[in-house]
Amino acid sequence: MILKNISVLYGNDLKFIEKTSVEVTGNTIQKISSKIKPSKNKVVNCNGLLLIPGLINSHTHIGDSVAKDIALNKDVDSKIHPMFGVKQKILRETEPKKLILFMRKTAKSMLKKGITTFVDFRESGLDGILLIKKALFDIPIRVVILGRIEFYQSKNQIKNNTPIPKSYLNQLEPLLKNCDGLGISGSNENSDSALKQLSKIKEIRAIHCAETKQSYLKSKRMTKKTEPERCLLLKPNFLVHMTYASKSDLKLVSKKIRGIVVCPRANASLAEGIPDIEQMMKMNCNVAIGTDNLMINSPDLFREMDFLWKVTMGIHKKRVDPKKILKMVTVNAGKLLDKKIGCIKEGYLADAVFIKKNSLDIDPLQNPHASIVHRANENSIKAVMIGGKIVHGKL
Image (cartoon, rainbow, N blue to C red; front, side, top):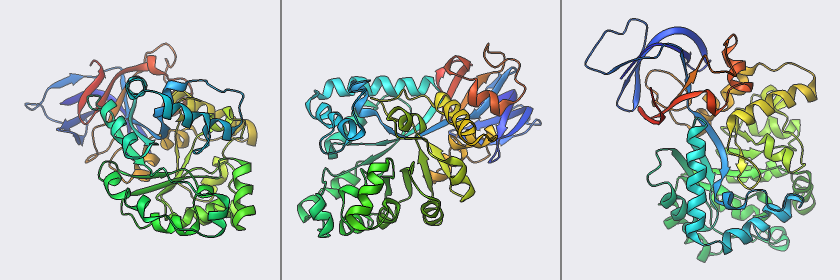
């Protein structure tokens, strides 16, 4: 396929190119040039369209999409604690067919919103992993599934540095054969020994960290170490949240991991604050964005970018380049996952979103990065491509 006369946000810096052609061969972007010669490939005139990288939702829990807006006025632990939260009760008591139905609806919703890849922290052990795979079997969205063994330690076990029992460790092999790695609930449910045991797996390792002030203080009380210090025992590829991370925490983790996933709307809706992306960027952290729990948020990265951009400027009273926000759901997320996605560039997977430049909300398109970040929405999308195939809309 040759996409002719198209505008593009090109490469790692999302450089705006007014008019060019993009050649897609198989599932990959082969060539980007205004001088692509006609070939046997299908030629599509894309005049009036802007091609941007497929959006990457770097942190979700889509299993709780059956519980939208339940327990709105409860505190964080009452809602989502991995051992006694209302979310866990719902996941245990809801029949699998119903969970599958709503996970499918969520995946379809993400596709319509330009999300081509999402990273899901999957609860309920191997059964939970098999459930999401069943839900998505015919939906062409990319998913990175991070499972977990349902093993959580008490305060005394953590203080006594109790390791994970062999019976639970034996669950790791079949679990990891069916997913992409581990998505750990947090260091406050795992001893140092447990985190070190889990650090030995070769697949992706990620963990919630410093989401709330309460969890940050709890770590210090129990272990005299900060949450980020303890989370690093997992040797994680990335951390999720870091809402209450200090400057020294950020300096420490920036040298050890691929990046941080922030979830600003989720943190705000839980009345837990806003992640300090300005400080994260100063510490050279690679920042990506996730929409987090479906019971709390819609899986909409346009709304997430708009919120994060404006609330950050409102808090710090300082301008933030919108391109930096857009990178968080594209280029930065691709780096976080160490995959050739999130970028319109030769050799990368052909995951992209076709934006209508004349759509009511963004016409006239005078600053493409700002317009995508705070004006675009699913109505601005003409089509979505994953792996070189149009999976939503038409060209």
